[in-house]
Image (cartoon, rainbow, N blue to C red; front, side, top):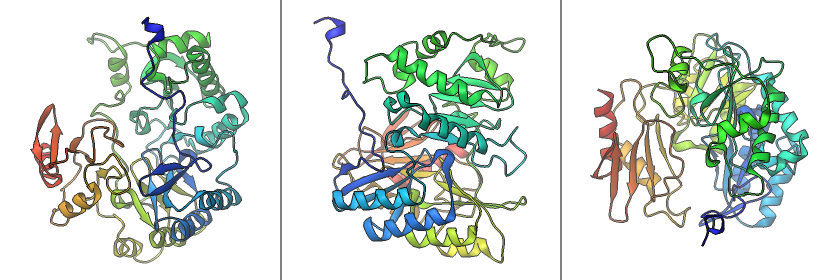
Length: 423
């Protein structure tokens, strides 16, 4: 059999769920609502909370792309009811492009002075341009755009196309190929780059992302046919993308130099960041957050937390009482898990239950710590980018993987490894 005739290990089209196309999980149907840039109004959050209570399992799941999921929907009729309500509040502006509206943005952009510019208007412009490009409806539901305001936070999360404010660089699958654009031109360049990917991909519908395409960054850059700027390295280095990014104060995606997630708690600039245990926001917690946010915009971050501008007495205490994470030393922070049993048929363990049990006796982390991710099988769904302590269910226990080592253990042992690595 020739190489061209080799069957693809993937189905011809990806099966990412959307608000209109549900995924059949072991515990029922699951839908995903895209929130470009994580942007959400309080009134919209209230509607989603009501849907979680009435149609789902009572909670909203925050994803690593700043989206929201509802699971355990009973049937197709429930999916239609959810889609209708989501559309009524403006969270489903298109039926054709709803699964490709995958857009990350620096969650604190415009709220502090760490970024070079406020990318929130660019999020809205890019979303509108994406929805207006009929051909881009054929992008995979996994293809990811990112707008980083210059602080290099979402730049580290593995986007296919990521624009960096300040340096005005466009990274393709983590590579700076020399493409540049200012704020006035970046939306047009991102749309052109996505179209170039589709042209280079051709009929290969199993190539969902730029990293799946051999020599993808170089081939897409060539297909764009646009002038590029040299990617230079600082004096005394061996050159290359990593060195160039280091000179700009950034780190390539997947390295430990990436900017951390926003620190939870109240900030001096009037911004409040609240973490969510294992990414599950209950309907009651969602209503409380919507009430505290007033009429201001809420941002869902890719680190499974929420950002809001708020004021008033003892808000931090009210959030803590409701079970939200507002203490930067909480052992729950940085701990994530896949769905596990009973929601996933592939899972070999109730990972969320095991993690909750392990955290019951965990003490404060004492500061920034390595992420811990617990998974129910070798697929390792939801694994965070960059260095991480993994606990992988084996059917007879767990295997702990960290720093190139592997040994039997438990989720509690993974937390202990995190503490060791932190020292």
